[in-house]
Image (cartoon, rainbow, N blue to C red; front, side, top):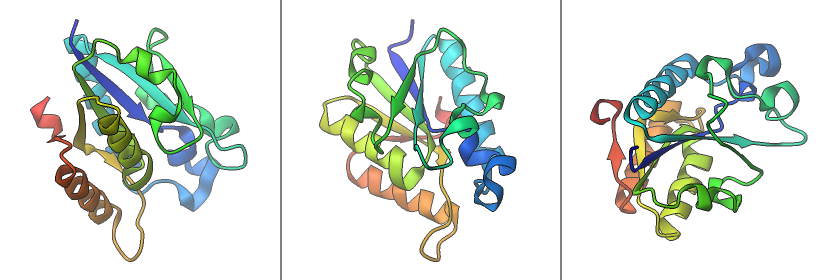
Length: 171
């Protein structure tokens, strides 16, 4: 059993499925799904725990059919799921006990500039050893920047805050 745990954050149909959200579907969504598939495969191969975090918005895309984890990720029935309504995955107090005894918490998923950032910083503040898989999280374009530029800026911000960044190749 690996001392690591992988949190896969908000990789729900409401972010990717154009039949549900139209043009709001995430750009480069297929690439993010592939990156998360790679991270999950690594976790399962090494015995690291996988925890699926799902964001719920009563009046948003992460509700109804959009609440389901993207089926391409195929969560195992034995892998815990955590519901959240706030950006940080740590806002659900059920998460911390699932991390007991784990030496490192790796983050992947959505949204770089919201839930991934908030979870990384909250985990660090709570005393967990948090690392972000720099090429396995993503977001939407914002403030005149591409989604990749936003993600890269968040990676820089998190590294400056002392949160280690890994690449999928480092796993």
